[in-house]
Amino acid sequence: MDESKIISIWFIIGCLLSLFGIIIFAANVVDYIAPWSGTVTVLHELRAGIWWGAFLIVIGAVYTIAFNPWKKKTEAA
Image (cartoon, rainbow, N blue to C red):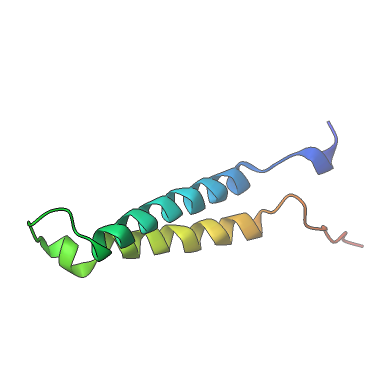
């Protein structure tokens, strides 16, 4: 199999982490704007879902960029 056509599993994991992060972040931003529950918990006050979604987006972006299969690899001399 051609080495240039192999996609790293870490690239796929990075894409999934970014996707889940976007979903979690968006859902919690909507909940922040228009809360659906009258119950207020400590995690709700700290906006843990927004922070967790942002964290997943950043980690996913790092993995996606680091293991990008389309970047040009420098050849060692």
